[in-house]
Amino acid sequence: MDRRTFLATTAAGLMEAQTAPVPIIDTHIHLFDQTRPQGAPYSGGGENKEPSLPPRYRKLAQPLGIVGAVAVEASPWIEDNLWLLETMAADPMMVGAVGDLQVEKPEFREYLDRYHKNQLFRGIRYGNLWGYDLTKQVDNPVFIEGLKLLEQADLSLDTANPRPDLLAAVIKVSDRVPGLRIIIDHLPGMLLKGTRADASIRELAKRSQVYVKISEVMQMQGPAPVLDRSFYKPTLDYLFDAFGEDRVMFGSDWPNSVAVNHLPAIVRIAQDYFAARSRQAAEKFFWRNSLAAYKWVRRDSSQP
Image 1 (cartoon, rainbow, N blue to C red):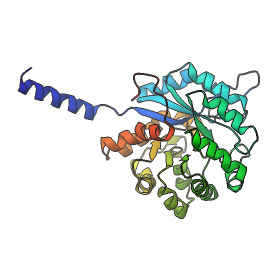
Image 2 (spheres, rainbow, N blue to C red):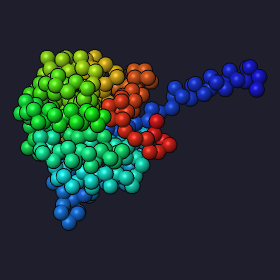
Image 3 (tube, rainbow, N blue to C red):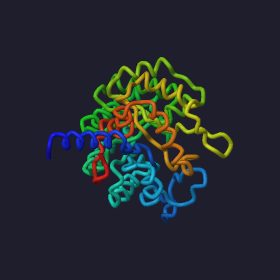
Image 4 (cartoon, rainbow, N blue to C red):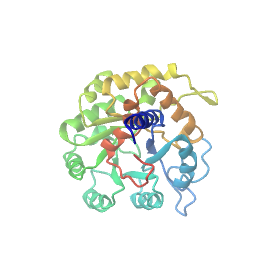
């Protein structure tokens, strides 16, 4: 190959790399099967009448450029951590699981050791869901010791359903277990509904181990999702300006509430926002930052 051909081929390759769609890791979906004999404590929202299982998600997600997903436990039943891991194991699109364990319970260490042996188990979720209350537990020494075990296992802590008092509690957690990776979900939803916690957000933004999921972002106008980029831009700009492009990541919240019927709109809102940003920033948001936060497992050649 002569020099001119080499340069032309290299330029074409670079152009293709720049224009190829950015692969997406969805960091917030829920799996459940309400048709099991024991049922399920949560079964989504909207018109969600069928089980939420990997094949159903794959059929919807793959055409949108989603190549992998982190499933967040949708049940407080301890045995459902195993159900989640077994359900995900059969589909390589599933790259990580966020379990549900009560850190303050005496059996926490045993369960953490048990589930941590599975490489798909990437952390737990604890906030203000299922009767848990992070704002109260943060002053419990047993709870803090449990979070230290989570940190030592190189796992992460997802919070659940942000409120100003929850964000203040996350600051305390970060103070007491500074090496723990913490992931705040659904923060755009709180801000878009008019609730502010600016001082806490500014403080959390200083902490390099704290990440934010841009999940629960889509808003509805009657039966249709709002797709106007200008509607979301101030809130997304606020979070990106605060946390920077290295600590925000995509999550759909499928199939919770209105997300069950609008996964394409949720992806479009995120992609429209990044149309005005660099490819490097888009790659961080859509997959690189989630790898840093969760250390998820690459299971398929389509995954970056």
